[in-house]
Amino acid sequence: MEPVPAPKKVWIYDGHLAEYPSALTGGSVHNGTSCTACHGGDSAQSSRAAAHTTGFRGITAATDCNGCHTAIVTSAADGLHTTLAGYPAILSARGFDLNDPTSAARFGEQCTKCHAATNDTPPQTACGQCHVSIPAPAGGGLLAGHAFQGTPSMDNNCTACHGSRVKDEFTGANNALLTRNKPFLTEGLPWKEAAFTLQADVHYSAGMECFDCHTKDEMHGVGAPLQGDRYEVTTAPDCTDTGCHSGNLVGINALHRSSHLDLMSCQVCHAQPYKNCFECHTDVTAENIPFFTIAGGDPGANHDHLMTFRVGRNPRYTPMGSEKLYTVLRHVPVDMDTFAYTGTNQQGGLLPQMGSVPTWKRATPHNILRVTAIQSACTNCHGTDYAKFWLTDAIANGEGWISTPYEPDEQSANASILVTDPLPMTLDSR
Image (cartoon, rainbow, N blue to C red; front, side, top):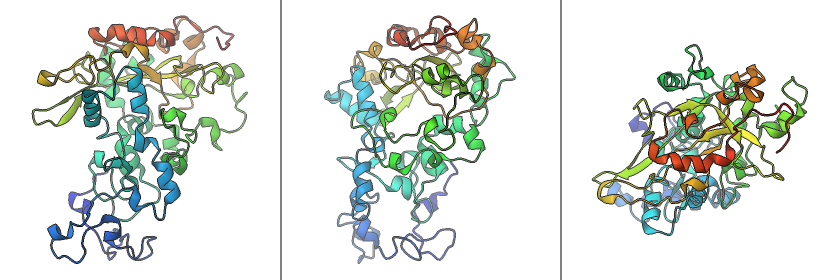
């Protein structure tokens, strides 16, 4: 994200600077709208303190947009950016009790301060965090003199929040991290080789941005689950939904046979190594400021992510469902001590069922290539080299990033998704 100079984050321009048009003058759709119509306050006052009274709010909420954008406001209220529904669902499955005061407080301190485009209590969708300003977790501030943007900026809005994984993978920016990883990786992995480098996603190289796949309906909460995660959003994109890949894929090449297409997600053959996170631990400072640390078990002691690539049985697969049996898996940053804190605040046992839900989760990395390492030989799935690419051991495939105390949970959590033998040449849905 290109930094916005601090003064320009707060200046409201009147339209006389072409590069910073006013939202309230000229040809803007909000032409004629007064500041107080959305922000409250008293426009008759001559001092900042006096003007910022009478219900003043610096960041407006969906209620201020509802008069003109009722349908969007209504659907966005149930969108995952507002509700964070996926987080309570998965944490509850691991035994996290949001009715417990300590657990609820720590969830609020550590999760909702970054992972929701909301403001006010109860939460309301903060429309301006996508359409007027940089999102608050990324630093906040106006993008261009309060000019509204119908389509948010990929750099300053989307990847301001979704940067660590999505942007770095999409733009091919993880090679320095991979280089730091390489000394600790298992011999024989293709991405351990000195010459192996990561590339930008083919869609990024072709000039595509987030909204070429992710529609405004999806972003505005249409089809979002009341309880569930992003993979349950009915308006979310699928490779075969688009005009690019909506035709019959069978026969495009030798690997596009029906047995592969029916049983494996596209990313199995078309994704590169991606970030995997381990041991995210939250805490508060002596001043009660929340913070977190990651990768306590990192063998390099750099608190790095692990760059790797693993395929396994899809934790979301059901025989009659729409999910594919085999999918790319990403390790997520959670363990039994994630919310335990330290010192006088220490309280363990807040995630008592860590072993009940896989920590290697279904993934859709944004780092697609037409040709990848796993395609280079049939033995990478059906023979001697399959262990280089498939999740065969939940601990060993963590490449040293999993600390000893967390190994029992890792083993029990992921037992059902391991692939402990090469796939048969004749695939079926067993």
